[in-house]
Image 1 (spheres, rainbow, N blue to C red):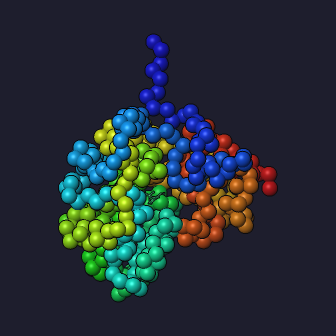
Image 2 (tube, rainbow, N blue to C red):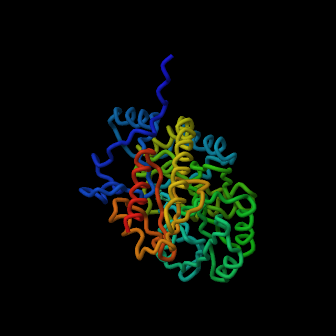
Image 3 (cartoon, rainbow, N blue to C red):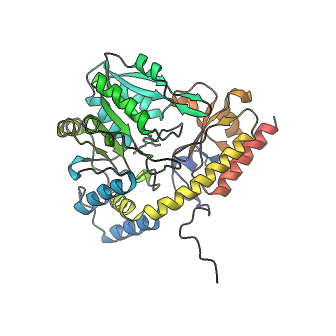
Amino acid sequence: MRPRPPEFDFTTPVDRRAVPGDKWGRYAGRDVIPMWVADMDFAAPPAVLEALHARIDHGVFGYTDAWPSLIEAVVEGIARDHDWHIEPDWLVWLPGVVTGFNVACALAGGSGDGVFTATPVYPPFLGAPANVGRQLQRADLVCAADHWQWDWEAVDAAIDARTRMILLCNPHNPVGRVFTRDELSAVADRALRHDLIICSDEIHCGLVLDGTHVPIAAIDPHVARRTITLMAPSKTWNIAALYSSFAIIPDPVLRRRYRRAMRGLVPHPNVLGLVATEAAYREGNAWRLALLDTLRHNRDQVMAAVAALPGLRTTVPEATYLAWIDCREAGLDDPAAFFEAHGVGLSDGKAFGAPAGWLRLNFGCPPVTLQAGLDRMATALSAR
Ligand SMILES: Cc1ncc(COP(=O)(O)O)c(C=O)c1O
């Protein structure tokens, strides 16, 4: 019997230089393998592509709000994947998660009030408070025994009378943690104790490689009441530029304040993004599970390669397709520039609020591309 072809193709490289795009466009005309910005080099799921084709074939693209079957697909998908039973009314549609947490900062207190976050973190977290006249308050996560953890003393020193909101990233970009129920309860305790809003960016929740994603709002109704959860299909199903995401806000007063802060500033998501969202949540789970197998395999490839690179260390990401690499012992003045000069484009950790010497590597690509990048890193270090 002939072997069945793989149902989904995560191995054949797609030529992304053939279309405009940030990841590959940054290195147009140069022999650099891009492993920086957080999108993957995989085509979107067939079910998403089919839904988009069908909608484009219709030919008319008038103003379109989220419709009942889309809302149902999202509500059912979140129940299926995260055992969190949300009400349709709790959804507020957004064109992006970054927009979503900037809006949250705008309703957290007033000018000069504080927004706390744990660092290093996805760079737009660091700028969001200042965008709306709030102060960033931060505490570093710590890496002990190759495991990233909260430093509760540092958290308690950073949160003070000015603090109005905790901006949480879970699963965490860049350290790759899937926070446990105990850790989330400890975060929530601080929010309850200091009467803070929690804005929880859970955009990576579909990309859990080990463990289980717990939405912080699902741990307790008292926590839900003060929480704005942000989710999107964009990372999981690789449709970032379709700009469709949503906030989940169970409390009607907080939801009303949130909608008011959006008014006149935040547009609806694009209709094609909404179409893709319905297809992804309704029909994209088999593709997602196959993707996770590929990402686990890629993660192993990264762990093995980094372990053999002199002066580099990393931890095992529990989620995402991002590895957070410590290069401080490698004796490189500027690791991002060094590897870029040797043909690998990585994210410089400084943008994440880390000290010099950290890099983030995106392993969301076919294994052959990944191996080529890792080989270049090894060659670069051994040729010094
Ligand atoms: C934690 C996190 N939040 C938000 C985003 C981007 O969200 P959006 O493109 O929906 O604004 C990213 C992209 O990498 C991310 O890692």
